Image (tube, rainbow, N blue to C red; front, top):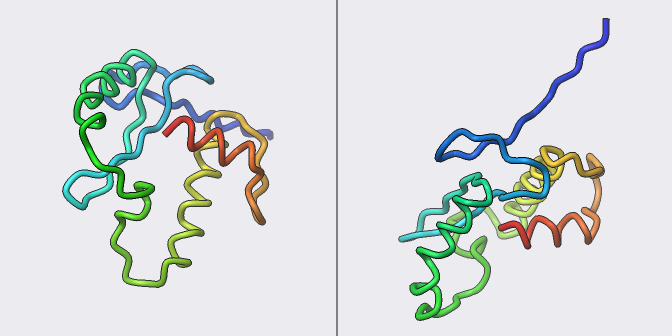
Length: 114
């Protein structure tokens, strides 16, 4: 018997389905705590609109991943990020290898969606 598992990405605010190519996962940090939320296009635009005046006046301190506190070395966080990117890509139906380096197009798509 064949079994098919379907993963549906839904907006964390209103539980509406997020279609492929719409909305996305957003990672952000506030007061030393990292957060991630999945949002449809409308809610993603609303979040960006609310944050825009703060971002415009803020100082960049580097990538958000740098804000993470880690008990291990910096390299120990890399597999976690790679796994997160792999899972993100799979939920969007993108072809991503289970092991090895991530294709540049996958990493770029992930970064532009964040």
